[in-house]
Image 1: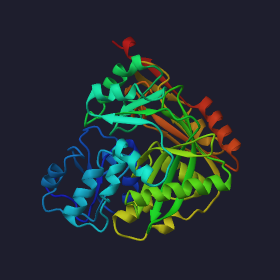
Image 2 (image 1 turned 45 degrees about the horizontal axis):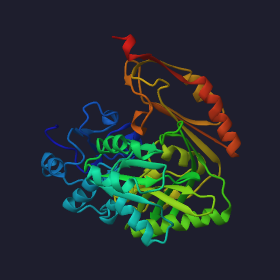
Image 3 (image 1 turned 90 degrees about the vertical axis):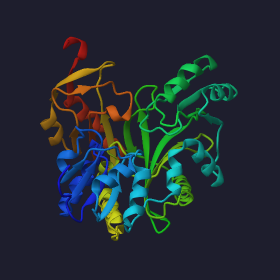
Length: 408
């Protein structure tokens, strides 16, 4: 820890690769940053002016280490772990923006079901408990297939889709291993069109709404591709009204949120989950490519108590698509090299090529969001154009990975 923290700093809770744009934007504006993350090798640390290597969940440890620091603001990004600290530290330091208390409810998937019901959103069968035997017994009475997951989880960690009661014990044990509260939720699998909806609120209204189609890796719930969705205006308005209503119910009058939604064949939307924060998996890059908006700038302006609406005004109307890159292996390996990076960046329509892993790094199977090793973003006048650019760049850029067993 430094002997003296930078004055007038922005405290950034988290330093994963998803957070790097926050540090870059603060540096562009000449605002010093203090990065908080317990990982000594956190990817965003090199972009920060000072580093505090403690858990973002440990509010008291953060405050004790900072001492007499009076920050200009506090901000979090695409991580649920820091949300309670974001609020607590905002209250402690009296920052202009304080993360809303009700928004913390979004991190409890069981509680969110009740909020969705109170907003008149069509529901489906579910049960949750911190007692594994209880959740198994109740889940066996639901309509299969089921999705079993940690009630307080994120990033597709600990999630299993099962088709028979005999698989409940293993699925519940797996979900509990990823739950800080050891609480598991089992939900009836909802069929339909999977969507992700990004919202940025101002004064209780949605200033920005982006609806995206989601494609997954195989039968998993790990996102492979996101693309701006083509929908009838009536459906788009319906989904926009639903998410705006949910934001107000969660106390999000100003700031970002995102929702996982399934649009059923009956035209009804089922809201699966909510995240009261910026979307992860490179979503800010996709929004910039499609609309020319900058949600990162807007979030930092909000954290500093500044007007932020101008950063969310569209300056273009393109279609965009994003592909997440992961290891092609189903076992751990070592990244040897990236092939085709320069060619990928030079391809028409490609707006972003990001590689998070470097040669020599350990890479894991792409079975959860946190195991991605890069991303690609493309934009074009139509969904077909954006998709075609992604398909082409995927043939140029690839990671060379040596299985870990071959290095032993």
